[in-house]
Each structure stands twice: as C-alpha cells, then as structure tokens.
Length: 275
Image (spheres, rainbow, N blue to C red):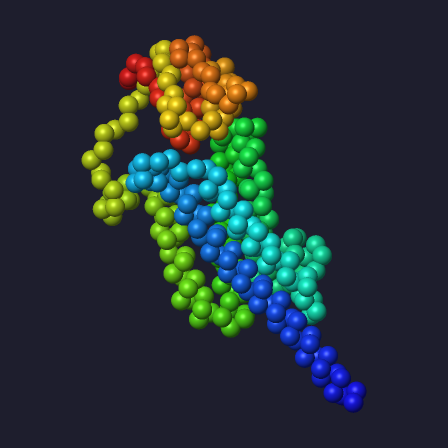
C-alpha cells in the first residue's frame, strides 16, 4: 500500500515538473524568436530600409515592443525554474550569474541582465551623450550572442539539438546576415558586390567657417540627441517641438557637427563652405 502511494506521488511530481519544463521550453523558444526578430527590426529601422521600401518611417515603438516581448518570454523562461519540485535554480540564482547552476545557465542570465539594462536605459538617452548611450546599446549584440549560445547549449543538454538545428538556424540566419551588413566595412561590401561602389564622396565642411543648420521635420523624431550634443543650438520645447538656431556661432561648429552625426534619423543638414 505504501509502495503504491509512493509511486503515485512520484508520478504526480514527475508530471508537474514535466509540465513546468514544457512551459520553460516554449517560453525559451519564444524568447529566441523574438530576440532574432528584435535584432532584425532594429537594423532595418536604423538603416532606413523600412522607409525606403514602404515610404513610411518605422516607429521606434515597434522595436521597443519586440524587445519587451523578448524580455517577457525570457523572464517567463527563467521564472519557470522556481516552480520545479526538483530545484535547479532558485532565488537570486536566476538573475545573478555563477551563483548556481551550470555554465549555460550563466550565459542566459548574463544575456537577460544585459538586455534588461539596455531596455531600461533606452528611454534615458536624453541624459547621456549620444556616443556613451550608443556604446551601451550596441552591447546588445554581445547579449544576443550569449543568448543564442545559451539556447544551443540548452538544446544540446535536453537532447533537442535536432529541433534547434532545423528551426533555430533558420530563424538565426536573417539576423546574422543583417548584423554582418550592419557592421561590415563598406569597402568589403563593395568588393563582394553587395553595394554600389560608385557613390558621390561626402562633402567636407570647413570647421572654421559659418554653418547654416536646417532640420527635416518629416524625419525628426525628437529623440533629443542633438540637444545633448549641442544645447546652445538645439532645444526640445515642452510641447515636443524642436527649436534650433539656423546660424550658430562658429565657436560651436564642432558641437553642431557632433549633433548632426548623433541624429539617428539623419534629420539635420549642415550647409557651409566646403574644403
């Protein structure tokens, strides 16, 4: 009698853990999918490809929404470990790497923590210089690599490598291709025949000569990077409109050039004496 009760109890516990592990697997795969989709949409938005193809400007909120979906699915995947009867990770171990678990768990935790920091600071760009904010945002590439490695090591440990090989590599190929196109030097892309090498060289403006500033209101999204770089020239008003000086002093030319480079929408045009 007692033996049969123990068997029933063990079966219930096994069924419970099996259900939780299935939930963890589904949420983990969703996180993997949304991670790849977030990267693709971010690259296509930053390069202006969406606008050129559709004629409409991609919304920054779309990228944020996909990133939120990634973190939600990844957070569900991590929280599932807390509900296992056979505790693998618990407490701070699901958010602090190397406190417990295996090396593959630490990879996923580092990726999740880094993506969470990037997501939280995405709306704080007005309080940092553009270059510092951009470096932090670009660390998402490292987080994605860690997240993908965590997924593949997990698939190997759970004997699901065949599924990950067929589906995972298929989903990962577009982000890999777009990332390569995003970070590769233009000269290399020209040699590979991916872009046209016969482009008009960019005009170099005389830094010591007066400049005229103009802003394309259709492209400007009021992110505020220009105000961070050149507050003497650019200012975001309380009503959300951008106020700027068309003819700034020569002394702030360098700051104005930095503001033009910092604008992610390339909405700032500078006119002046060419070198």
